[in-house]
Image (cartoon, rainbow over all chains, first blue to last red):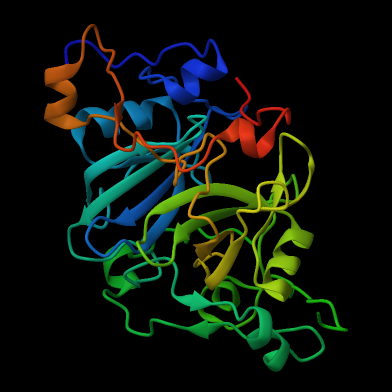
Amino acid sequence: MSSQPIIFQQRLSVEQVEEGTALAPKFDDRGLITAVTTDAESGELLMQGYMNAEALRLTIETGETHYYSRSRQMLWHKGATSGLVQRVVELMIDDDQDCIWLKVAVVGGASCHVGYRSCFYRRVPIGEAYESKQRNGQVELEFTDTEKVFDPKGVYGDAPNPTIL
Amino acid sequence: MSSQPIIFQQRLSVEQVEEGTALAPKFDDRGLITAVTTDAESGELLMQGYMNAEALRLTIETGETHYYSRSRQMLWHKGATSGLVQRVVELMIDDDQDCIWLKVAVVGGASCHVGYRSCFYRRVPIGEAYESKQRNGQVELEFTDTEKVFDPKGVYGDAPNPTIL
């Protein structure tokens, strides 16, 4: 780990932020930046989370994903409980620097607390498929993945489910 | 377009939301849901935006992406100005239904208002690369894409830049 903690630079101009090489992330009024996490090999979207400044700093310094859990309101080293650590293969930032893209390799192959490989295991029908399948405007989601990679109860035990209604 | 507008179902239980087939998206206190957009062919992350209920409904019904622009505070049919419409190939929703994944085909091949193919054209060095490259904790971003697909001035003219400092 570095003796000098990472310093994010000030946002001075649109040109600096969009066309420059300064790392000047925009944290929102909650102090968070959006993080999008894909599987570095398959390109599949695994999850979408948030980072505060500390989580981003730790991710950059350690090469393992750290997020900020909004439901638990705390720093969250992904995999600390489940062992399913995400190793960052490549970290990208977007044009206006308010979104982080993490390409990761997942130890154990699962990223979703429900037990699936990805958090995105259901498809929403669109366009003609929506038209033909809707009943009174309602549609059914289609499962694209039905096989759980792990048993959440065995991994998380009695820990509260992070999903909030 | 459907005569019956799409109806999002009520969120009744964690099991229904995570394991069921009801489309019951969670809009946050601003009325927005996060949308992550990837290139259906390459898997590359193109952009991350937000949708309100109307934008999600129109995306499902038309098969073209609609977002909610926070900077302009209005519904935003992507490509209406630039012609760079995104056709949705597949639409996925995540476990707790607070994030939408759009796999799209982009007319014209560009998604970023700066002119690049993707909004993510800069890499942040991490781990050992960070350690070796940092100076007093600061790092330089590395451009991974240097070729603009279009000239933003020619496409957007005098429209205000959406980036906010």
